[in-house]
Amino acid sequence: MDSFDRFNAAWAARLVATFDASGIHRVGTPGDHASGAWFECVAAAKGIDVSRMASPLQRTIVDEAYLECAGLRIDGLPMFDAPSAAEVTGKLCLSGNAGEIGLAEFPSNAASIKGQPLENLRRSTKHTALVVATRGTGDSLAPINAQYYNTPFGPPVLQVAGMHHAFLAAQAGNNAPVKFVSTYRRETADSFNIAAVARSGSNDANNASIAVVTPRTGWWESTAERAGGMVAWLAAVHAAGACKQAGTLKRDFHAYATCGHELGHLGLQTLTQQHAPLVKAAKYWLHLGANLGGAGNLTMMIRAADTADAEAMRDLLVAEGYPAQHILVEPISKISGEGHDLAHLGAKVLSLAGSNLHFHAASDRWPGNVNAAGIASISRAVARWVTMQAGS
Image 1 (spheres, rainbow, N blue to C red):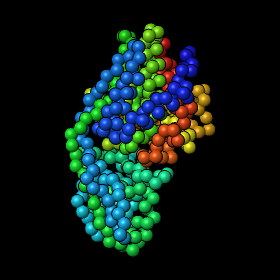
Image 2 (cartoon, rainbow, N blue to C red; image 1 turned 45 degrees about the horizontal axis):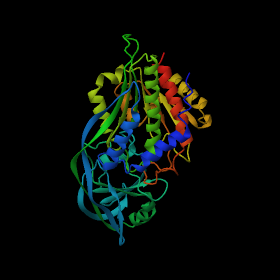
Image 3 (cartoon, rainbow, N blue to C red; image 1 turned 90 degrees about the vertical axis):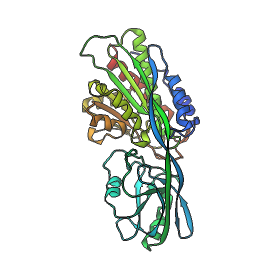
């Protein structure tokens, strides 16, 4: 079997550095389009058909977003699936206490799937507005994903960097008067998924397709968050192309790099609408989730519909050099992101997700927050998995 030695740390580092340099990757922005065009080019391989899948959207333009408290102005970012608010004045309080504007603290992954505590708070609160301090490493703001982007709900919500929480909590304890502003507008924009397909030519009804999916957009550069999955996705595509060229591809292979992860997985919605039969028909969907190859915390979570399949992937990762002590095989019930959505729609999913000390923060950059050797190990394991699943 091919050792896939070409998928090494230097190869991964070149790709990650290029992705990082293409700018902020928020969906619908120039950085999204630039990185998408580059990724489309590097996805090209013999035997693989690469194309774009248009995903129209409404892009959010922030006008003003800040809190004035005790003579200080704290800039923030609206929650993109909460209503806009020109101005709210009143007393600041800890969420659930008496006061017009409630203060709460949540991690940046507080909306990785629907139905989490932050959503429940927003749906039940009696506050006129909410301020949410986002916990994370460093001083930068780490926005929370807008799972209900197309259907905003609850009161206006302003997100501020977690570094402000202690100050604001002290002010909330005294019911300090504050001014809350969180205004935005939306304009028509566009983005796209990237699709890579290799056809086996097999007429065997038992040879169901293999599909691979990874998101490619995020709030900032989102380098460790997104690049590891994208690099491993490329390894999967090139492995399928090699099978096609060798005449050993026994299953159709589909791979999708989707846009709009931070806005309720908009690109995945486009994908599952346009290719609904594939969702359930595929033998497996390999979900390459967030933070694959982040530096500082090597924890890797594997979740699968069948525990034996998760354990087999763990063995592949260990064989390719990923440290076994950092790999956790977890129940499918813990799956998040696009993998969660696919499983909810009835797909059979195998999901990889890592850890990131700078998750959703502007400080998630190359090279300091990326482990290129880890990404290379993951990429080789993914390439071997594709060859075993789709090749003969």
